[in-house]
Length: 258
Image (cartoon, rainbow, N blue to C red; front, top):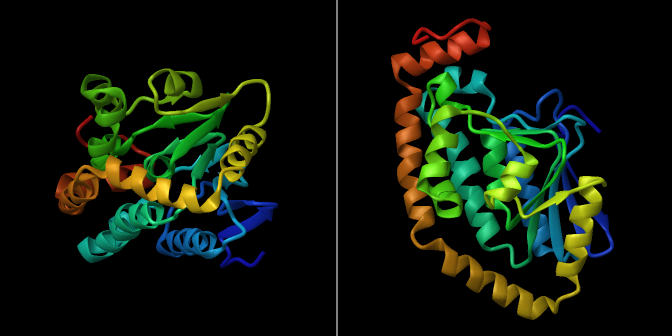
């Protein structure tokens, strides 16, 4: 694998695995997002692929989120490019996949890693997986999750998780309905492959139609609302307070509001 290759695709029968491998944290940059989107589009166009799994090659990290250095240096235009890919393009590619997608989370998923997970149709996790929305800790906002999370777990539970930034484990994620299955006593990939095979056994034509109808039925202005909060994220990212928070994170010191 070359230094520029941050994502690879593996095929096993009718199942494709999109594997993120950008140590140490799988931090999301423009090149990495481009490669993830390209991998999804290739899987969508491949008639031999009946289900897709997104996973990480790193032992203790699924994805730590956006590269915060970029958020400090990119300016409003750069942040807009990042969110266009992570939020809007990722939603669009999932919307038109025509086949089920599974996020197989092992280790830590934070921030943008949560976004990658929730844009898939199903999340499975191993017992070591942890989740969290730490954006506010750094002066940012977990924008897309303001739209997504209350619909899944209710507005009061969602407010707790989004505004405290606390981490939570796979069992809590399953209990509140964020995770569909926890791989109890086995590897997350075994669990994901078993689920993917059950999807792959279905007739491809009917599955494609059903997937399109399911995505359309669940949209309910979801993508329009995400576009709105994207603008808010961009504006917040450029404030003096947030820039000070990002600088404090980079320099491993306490942010000014504490």
